[in-house]
Length: 351
Image (cartoon, rainbow, N blue to C red):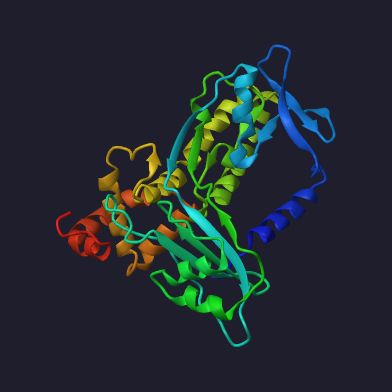
């Protein structure tokens, strides 16, 4: 697997967007507030600083990331803030780029702490060693339950050497560090339920991390953002057929569509974090343990069933939905091998 860096992905997207004739990029301009119509029911633009001005718009899209600016501005404009659901397993990361010396080819390896639902992971530590464009290697160390990887040289290497697999700890001493160690601990899963807001202004759409932010370790945020952009395109096409340039009704429809689109990614991220001892936030939904026991056994089945593996991989990458997990033939296969598959995932017989 060859991974593109976040810098490369964002650069390509930015260049392609900036090449569109109707797109203007203003890199030094900060949006500081929303502008409402005289009746206070429609967002008609934004206020900016550097320079200080009002930008008029038929539609304002908040893609401000975890800052979620609109969610904080709405109460000051007389609208309720959306309900918020959080699940926090207290993950932290430390990352660094390396260049491997001539003749040394590192394996592309990685792993998460894994364990049976309810018992917690056998280890709170994981890590990845990934090849990036132009041949640098990225080492990302991760720890949950506040077992954070350190940001100093000695601690970083010691953490890498403590993992269940040795490759990362073996590569670091012979590699050339080409970046500082960067740490990150703002990893809470946070969902703002704009679909539940009955009193909302027209002309405002909130998307991506501003509406639903995921623990970055699972690699879902940018995919969900892309799906959100497709959802917005769909609703804009519908709006054009209904009301021309009017945005009345679009915000509510988009919030409902987006909530459904992100449901599986949200459930998957929370399902993983519920495993971590000491997680805080919304409790697992009713039936979670039974659903997780079945899902774990599907994962075990995928180790020697290519068809199941391909479906599972496609679902985890949000290429298609999880409906196939309810296939009667699949359920029958899993039930017939219940204890065998469970043992592969650390379940005791009969559980």
